Amino acid sequence: MARVCSITGKRPLAGNNVSHAHNKTRRRQLPNLQRKRIYVPELGRFVRIRLSARALRTVSRKGLLAVLRSEGLTLRDVVC
View (tube, rainbow, N blue to C red):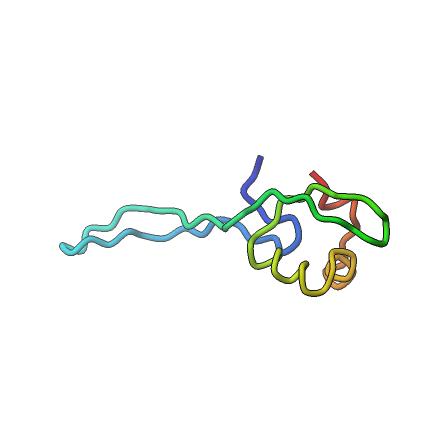
């Protein structure tokens, strides 16, 4: 399964670890993805979704369907 947030589309970033001697080795910064069960009151059921912690804060503030509408997504696009 790809490490991608289903709402925001956040993906891993690539960069360098830089030592004190200025040696560079490649590294990845992974998004903070969580698998959550979110209750959707409009549908009266729970939905399992994989999203970043930032998106989870937005969903808890606005509601899942409102966030999906603003991103141009449907519930079918994000359900695991």
